Amino acid sequence: MNKKILILAFIFIACSSKKDQRYVPVSNGNLNQVTVVMGNEEWNGVLGETVRNEIATIYEGLPMDEPRFSLKQLHPKIFDGFARNSRNILWFIKDSTPSFKLAQDQFAKPQILASFRGEDQELMAEYVRENASLIQGLFQENERKEKLRRIDKSRANDTSLEDRFNFRLTYPTAYKTVKDTINFVWIEKSVQKGTLNLVAYTIPLKEISLNPLTVIKKMRDSIGKIYVPGRLPGSYMITEEAYLPYLFKTELDGKEAYLTKGMWEVKKDFMAGPFVNYKIRDEPNNRWIIVEGFAFAPSLSKRDYMFELNTIISSFTQKENREN
Image 1 (cartoon, rainbow, N blue to C red):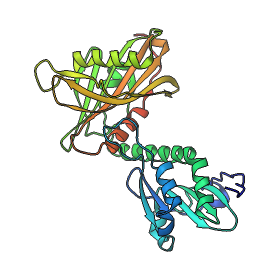
Image 2 (image 1 turned 180 degrees about the horizontal axis):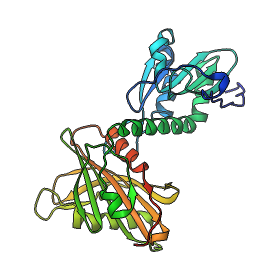
Image 3 (image 1 turned 30 degrees about the vertical axis):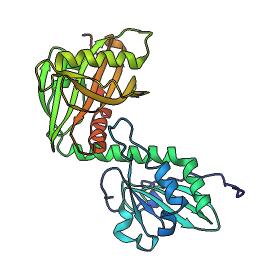
Image 4 (image 1 turned 135 degrees about the vertical axis):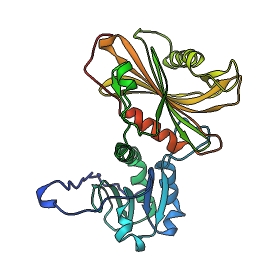
């Protein structure tokens, strides 16, 4: 493409500043939904295709491909009033002066608005490609905070995790503790055709030279055999052999952590589903804290279930360290 791309300016409108004090309504929309403001021709052309490929990428670790975000196209002529209250917006405007801007809480709160200007689809599509990771990250954090806000309305007061392991998670009252032993807590929520599950345990802090994925698999399988039985006698949860998990290095509550997304199955039974596992380094107490979420919901889409579990685990906070 011969057109020169201008240097991008990321502009956040801070509604808290004195000169910008104004009323904005509460944003709306389903979780993990993005409103895409563009004409039908653009939606069916290279620009719409680029948005679908770069923004609505595959959510990792699910049995079937599901997009990270659900995209809702809106024609510019009806992008007014209540339609502007969406939490996450991509706005494409045909203009002779190309630009890309980010605004926070412009029409509603909380809200992230990414606006693109350009003479043609190709130029605006290039802006999308160059800034897809940034936009995804902002939308994901916006949705995580919104989910936690909703959970906090009916937050559970159960202290099983705090009493047993000295850390807290924010989860709703629909989750109930179903197993609490010396070094294992299992919390469960019933959903349509299945359950959402959170489990926690600890292992000694050891420097092991093996591949982290190998270590996590062995750890999960041994814990599953002891604590997570299947429906049939002798059956228990293991890491699915045919599915290569995703592994990321991250942190929780300022602590080094490994995030694994993959598939579980039940040995000697026909049960399976996705899991998200965090292995958190607790140096003062010489241990790894393991917090995992897994879903069992046959024949249903699982993105929003795993998003909920991952969001709950992201709320991990540890009290002042104490010796075990």
